[in-house]
Each structure stands twice: as structure tokens, then as C-alpha cells.
Length: 321
Image 1 (cartoon, rainbow, N blue to C red):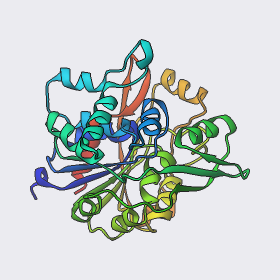
Image 2: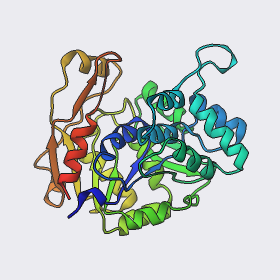
Image 3: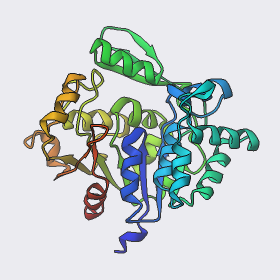
């Protein structure tokens, strides 16, 4: 098998998806990122509200991750203004917004940016509809907006009992279903369960396409929980929750980190209300799923956060095929 020509589709959002893509593109040129569009915070949220457009932040990060251009172009697309009325706004977001306005089409803006950055593969918003994420918590409170859901989870430490999109069941963007149907490897995660991965699966056509796909379906588990959102969750809990949306038994392989995190970094996450995700090797789900345990920790010493080691992760993904 020529693994360099394997068709890979990665579904998610947030920093987890863009981090993984940097490793994936070294193994195949046929990679498609399908990105959630429920973000309503920061500069993306402002552009979304004022220009009635798809929030560009996660899409921009994926474009930069797959870019094969001069470093200055990547830096430019990630540049964040420090002063004035544009303080906090990202140039890449503004670039995508301007292109969308010029062409009247956000998909066209992504395509043009893809050419400018000479990216490997494709980046697709999961839908072009103006969707909003809603979560109902165990105390009955209903919270609107991805950012607000994350903040409420952290502040109140209540579990999510229901998650939905409004408008309900939007149409997938062009090429999304075709990419899933043609995939040979389908990747879910890493990323926040309810705010990065699940929003994609709330689109019925997307969930059905994943369930019916003949691709190898791999879930990359997070290393840490999300404060409030998945407090107390295990790896098995994440898998079972995902399969509520795509069907029991859909996921074939789960990749989990088995490397210890240095105490000084772990302490910062614990203080924020997070904990390491653990798994139970005796859990019944492992009778039908392959579990790959791997040392995947990468530490950014300057910013003091933990990420997946993109190169090791990619190796384990392609060794599973």
C-alpha cells in the first residue's frame, strides 16, 4: 500500500485539529480538514456578527498548518494587532473576510487563500450556514454560544446533558460529504468534545456519512479534560459520547497518550479545573476497538501548555492502516 496517497479526512476544530494537520501533511498530500463553524468568541465572533460570515479563526489556523509557503506569509496570516481599534483582531481573519466580501462567497475566499499559501490538501467549513451552538446543563440551564458554553462549564462545573445547533440540521458545505465518502482514513479529534468535535456531528448528513464510510475511523483522545465540560470523563466516556452521534461501533481505533506530564505543567491544568484523561484497559469497549497507547506529549516551555506531538501522532495514525 502506498500510504503517501492515502485519502485522509480530519474532522474537528480548535488548536487540536491544526496541530495534528502539521504532522499529517508530511505523510500524504491528500488531506482534507473539515472544520466546525460554531465559534462565536474573540475576533472571529466579531466578524461573524458584523459581517454575517462563517467564523474564520479555526479555518485560518488549518490553512496555515497546511501551508507550504514562505514563513513570513504564515506569520502574516497569524499576526494579531496590538494597538488601536484593531487591537486583538487577527490579520488572517480580516484577509478571509475581505476576500469573502469581494467574491460574495466564503468558500471562494478559502480557495483563494489556499492557493496563496500553497496548502497541502483542502480546508472545508462543515457548513456555510450561520449556526449557533446551544447546551443544556444538568441543572436545567440552557446556554447559547460556544464561548459562553465553555465559560459556563468552567464557572459552574455542571455536566452537559444536551447539545444542539440552531438552525437544526444545517446543510453541509460543498465537497464535505464527498470527502468523507472517499476517505480511507477518517480522524476525529483531538479537540474539545462538545465544542470542537460534536458540532460537526450534529449535522445529520455528516454523521450518516461517517457512519457509512468504509474508511478506517480513528479517534485521537485528548490528554486532558475540559474544565466543567468533561470533568470526570475517561477516554471511554469520550468514545461512548461520540458514538451517540455517529452510531455505536463506528470508531475502529482510539489513540491514547500514555506518557507522563511533568508535575509543574500538570499542576497548572489542575489549578484550572482539568485532569489527565485515563482509560480502563478492562473496559468492554476494548473488545471491539483497537487501542493504541503512545507517548505523545509535547510541551511548549515558553507558553507552558501541553499539545500532542504532531510528528509522533502522525506516525501512529499511518501505522494503523
